Amino acid sequence: MDTLNADQAATLLHMNAKRVRSLARAGKLPAVRVGRRWLFPRERLEHLLGERPGPRALGLEALSARNHLRGRVAAIAKDGLMAEITIDVGGQPLVAIITRASAERLGLTAGDDVLAVIKSTEVMVAK
Image (cartoon, rainbow, N blue to C red; front, side, top):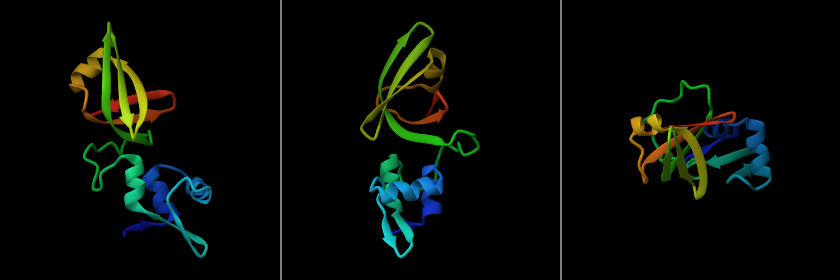
């Protein structure tokens, strides 16, 4: 089993290491305490993120936004210039309002695997 220390888990989760340790203490992240160190099973963290093991194929590491959530398009509603994209992220719906042109340029359809990129109050969709 591949395990990560708190700093490595924080990098994977795009979080602060202090926050990762706090969530582990609270039982909200899968972890085991060994002495004074926390160890996190990589596979379980990736499962929580909805990621498949392996390198990211989208190459979005250059974005300043650090909140990348993998999900599947559950529904698309287009009206005028805008499109409402509902994404299932680990059983939780996430709604993104994007331009209709962007939805069509991406060729979004229900069932597509996508990446929701969250920056402040904005949600972007990548395919």
